[in-house]
Length: 270
Image (cartoon, rainbow, N blue to C red; front, side):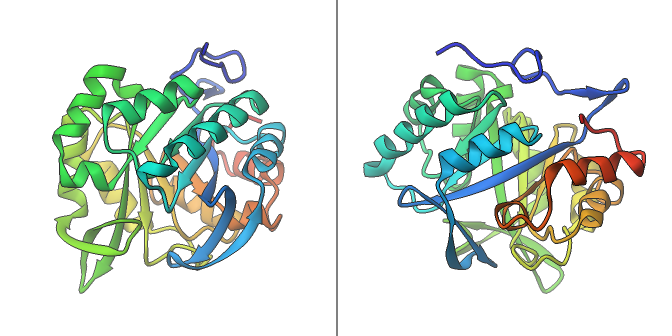
């Protein structure tokens, strides 16, 4: 399938606004059994709608990219996810990333051929870090997003596996630096402490990560107000900000958000 362009940009090129790299706004659709769901702190999920319909709506309303995460993916469900990717690719004209249960070169190949622009890996990369090298070498680092779910425990950020269910001894910042060295093109960092709380992003952790690595960072977990997005870009030094419920339940309109960010001097594409 031919790769799409977003606003006439070649695939993989970060959009610019007034000569600066534009900060990206990314709605996230957590998929379970073919439906979009959203919870708080990774639990208490509720239905948020049809993923293809939501994708089309966000594409039309100014989202820069989309992220789809099959939060209960298993090998048997790969075909289901592939079918959804095909439908989404037909419905939108902006880049989108798909993740959940991705554990091999073959998985990534299936999703990219179905129309995904990037593929996210998480647990499989922690279990076998060489996977990142293999994917980057095979598909190019612009296609590979490493998702990191981490929780602040007794003052230390610890990486978690399996959709946040299994803690590890991995330090967030050590792991971020390692995945960059192994060829990741982008990091999607979700603070489990902030997820779904609408109290703001983990800006201190974001800023520290940004000082340690050179690849783009997507901030995730905690969006509740327009100012929270501004803070993620200004205080957290994030390159993109991802959110779910505030968009799904129309608490924040993307057009209003982008205009407010522009008014604060934050480069965005309107």
